[in-house]
Length: 360
Image 1 (cartoon, rainbow, N blue to C red):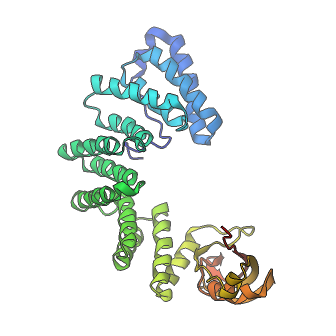
Image 2: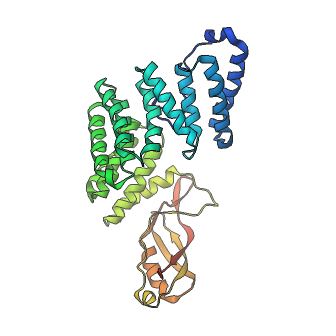
Image 3: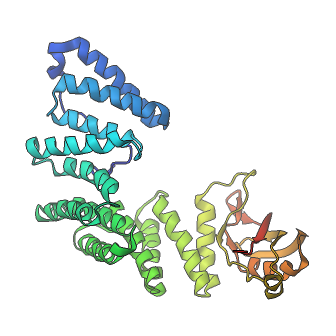
């Protein structure tokens, strides 16, 4: 795990066992609650997460002292476990950020792990300050030639900037900056670099540079195929985005290999419904729109071995006037085919297309 990722990461304690000798009872009590917190993280038990994190922090503060780096890490764990609507989260983050800057100026990664959630909390009220705080950390890391850390910080700032239309321009600059650092200093197989590639592709697609987006996503797929012997969400995401882009650019044949790749990566369950990787929305029939008609059509169809839709049949409909548009749209959809014994097979699926007209 990258040292700068914060999403329910357990920030490790740095003090050795000799430090506990003077207070064995307090140490024992702390270990009990800290282990309970780690168990809650492993189990994904959200109900127990905050209470165990708080208890470990409260006892740890007494055990280590308020300014100790272990206490800071326990506080980060506690703050991370809180919901963003909890006002205590912001108070705690601001408190430990102040302590960290006063007593641990060399711990840039710890400052970042406090600054990031605080920036997210403050972004709506103060976009400039939130972005500047993250960008400042990124620049410090870059100056220290800690390029992976700098890349993480720049990308997190870009993600935050992308959340508001007024800072989208800033987001684009930050993503490009991250990309420059990655290409110059990080290996192609770096998870951080692959993460940035996903964002750069999204940026290219948003700017209608579909060919550039396809090239970037194909590069991600090739990196996994050539260098990495495990499946990863980034690879799955790249395949899925490529299906959409190839269909949008009318290159269905090129989309097929990515439909098959996804099917191989995602285990098939007999009870599951096939979800489309690409869907074309039906055109609202003009005669139905003139009549202000809403409705629906239920369809049965076969997903071919290549993920195409065929053999469409109408099960039922509220209005016959919606049937033609529904079939024409469904014919364009793409799926990951069902796999049996390592081979693609045809499978029957169903869908309901709903038509709702606004009366406002």
